[in-house]
Length: 138
Image 1: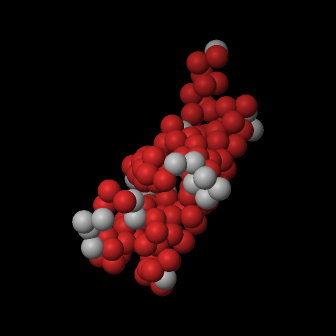
Image 2 (image 1 turned 90 degrees about the vertical axis):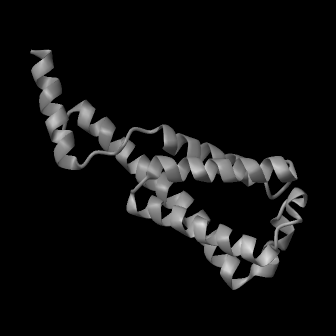
Image 3 (image 1 turned 45 degrees about the vertical axis):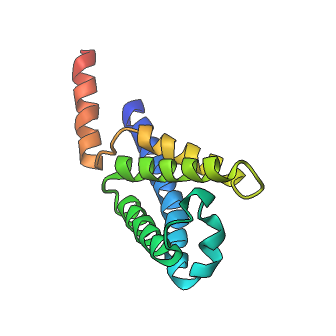
């Protein structure tokens, strides 16, 4: 296996791990909004008090589950990861940095890293890239 394919394979695994981690977090958040909606009332920013709490949290839960599914299925990954980062930036800006939101900074970094990664190719496409690189060296 060439260095190009090996590097792309490592990148593929990193891409998968980042997607899986963010999907788990956002999937959990989304599902929990349906199972335990009252626990999320405190996470509605004060400037959104005019919005009915339950419908807002249910819509947010649906969005979070959809984003998690996009990440799990490796579809619209850039859109999903930017959505995750934007949501988390909103949380940090609304509540400041505290013992809970500090984890969101790490999640923001994960989401942005994923958004900046190249679109993952299938293994057979990696082999074609390897052949192309070999031809270019000749």
